[in-house]
Length: 343
Image 1 (cartoon, rainbow, N blue to C red):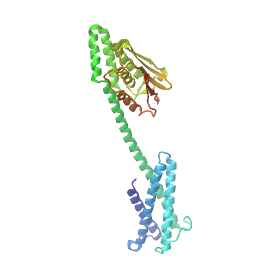
Image 2: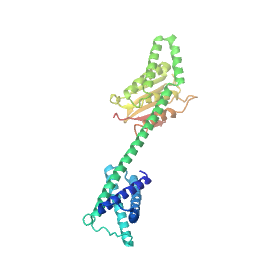
Image 3: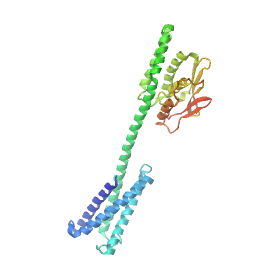
Image 4: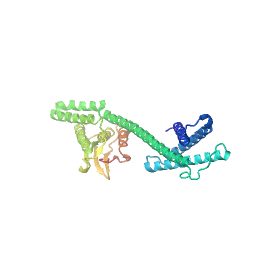
């Protein structure tokens, strides 16, 4: 709630309190000409209460907002606001009594000896209770709205990263290489060509099926990776050796789709693949992490940075875990992926 709105709200509440108390004591509404000092006094009290409560509310929102402890924040706000209003009322009453502008006396026993002051105390408590309730509802709605906007932005950003991964797998370069392989196989070995086309179709089917999916099971990812590995074996024969050593109890854990395929493709893209020095890649589990490791066989003359695919994976993982992906680039190139919770 903005400061201006709080001041307007307290001014209206103050005037309503004044009219109610005056009518209850005199059975008639006050005449402005005869009682304008009381109107001015009510306005001063209302604005003083509103300004003070605005400061208290903002201070509490920084030090102890509703997100940390709803009950304690509500009680603290109610108590501090009540203390401030009481101080303002006492101060104004004392000043008015001391200057003789109004025939007022200090509260000797507001709960017993003066019915008017008792009513004012009860109304103040009820008003502050309602005010703090409105503040809580406003804050909750604002947090909910902001949270929903952040959630939608995060989901849109995640889909953008997913789309980037999809484009990488459906790149013209990748399709060109696959078509060349099929073309050479058709005359040499139609049976292998047919299997290659089937595995290529399964790979693309997985890519397209997961384009709007945030997470898949590790089992699904590994099945797609085996299809992709078949394509690599046909293209590179023994020059690429992929080993998958993942325990069965991890197969139902979630993983962002195309994560492993991007890492394997990165390893192939950023190393010289030859029969003389085969590229050895392993996918295994160690120390609560999924590790993708490959040896270094030399860097091709024309290649892009590792960071494109790795950045995509890191950004997608950031939506699901606070743990960072670890990258070790020494004798071997190793990427350590945190295991995501199955919940």
